[in-house]
Length: 288
Image (cartoon, rainbow, N blue to C red):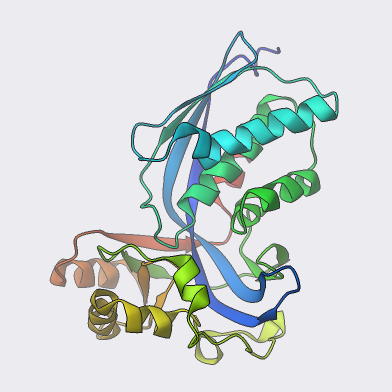
């Protein structure tokens, strides 16, 4: 273990927005073909990686109700250990402490981002045994949203959301609001009203006016609380659902306008954020 590897490593796990989300058809494997633009935002979880003398993975996560064995951070670490063993690559034990700030089940990609930071962080600590392409394949096994956080740049995504063409959307300020509801992604996909035949868009031709989130009308029908909040936010600016979660985001011309709107609304959980086209995870690693 080198001196660098012997030090604790602290890394962010940023949230993301889906600036739009279309379904362009069904796949033979049961998944759907998607089109979306991912953009990162400047709120994040934090993960601390501390080397251990014994070759084991420990996870300290006091902020979520997920069992350790089911936690995406632990699963990602164990999966990378297995890959090291199969490829005869060296590794060492690590204690991972997860400091959660991002809400769960919100469409912000919190759990997926935590998993990606785990893959990228351990790969760094263990001396880069795997290329980014190899990490992306492992990430896709863990969940459809994990690869974008490994990729680390805003992207027009296709496939199941894991094929990327880098884009540079405007880095707007947003008010992100989480209604106090839990949304079932499986129930949304099962809804017969869900639009699954969007015409594919060239990556260079997407914009707010010719896109939507196809899950939004289904969510607004199924969850009156989300519909009420959506109507309120539309008074302040363009508003959209992100992913298949509960969070809504409203676009503003500047930070001051977003803060003013936040102050006028009785919001139980909200964040004023800015879009980022390069993730804080990748920016942090380049400075180490």
